[in-house]
Amino acid sequence: MANANNFNDPMTIHASDTPGLNLINEQLTGVENYGIWSRAMLIALRAKNKVAFIDGTCKVPVTRNLTLQQWERCNALVLSWIMNSVSNEIFGGIVYSTEASVVWIDLKDQFDKVNGYRIFVLHRDIGRLVQGSNTVSAYYCKLKHLWDEYASLVTLPSCECATARQYVEHDQQQRLLQFLMGLNESHAHIRSQILMMNHLPSVGQAFSMMSQEELHRSLTSNETQTLVFYSMQNKDKNSESKRDMKCEYCH
Image (cartoon, rainbow, N blue to C red; front, top):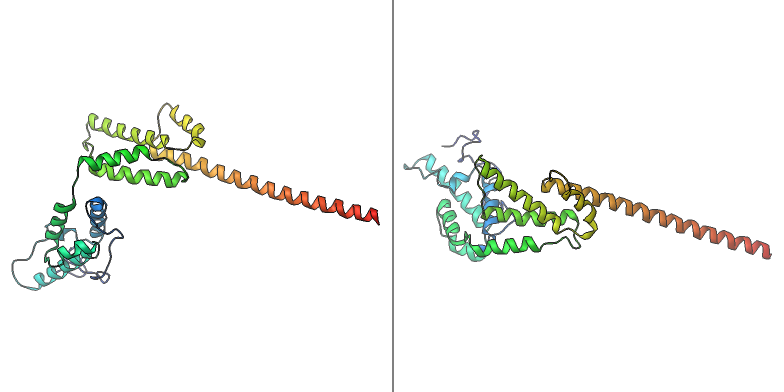
């Protein structure tokens, strides 16, 4: 049986581990959001130390004892958490399942459809995205969301060789150019400064530079509006003073 004080034991159940708990905000609806949903669930289950119940490493105990009872409780918890995060249509297909790892594999088989069309759509959306009426921060967040999903489908080499590093550097440069191309023309000056650098910054550094410029513009604009406001007030006061003086002379 799991030791209640051993937080590294996947069969340890904490006071906050209840069947009605919603681990993530994302609800699985189908192929279109399986990638985001599965990643969010993995992160949440890792935080709960229950990944072993979906990857099959924590298997059903052979003998019927207290360890089996504890395993069944944990398995039921994970099943409940999965059921709480899927649509009603998908829920109906898994409610009679008895093992969390089997449900996880079935959902992957049904909805993990990595195909050329989804990659095409993401590539197109990245190329079309522009800042428009968004702030630099909002525009960057939208672009990063598309990049992250694209990266989950098209994996770059992860080894330490020179070729792999070149692939990663090329990908980072493409992201920088995509970010700069989508910015409004009001940022043309600082965009040109970035492109003329001997060593191009990372896309994160470029975003930081653009955000600082946007903040500076906002502060300058507010100061200008304040000066105009006080100028108008002083003008009105001067006009009133002149009218009062005229009235005194008339009398």
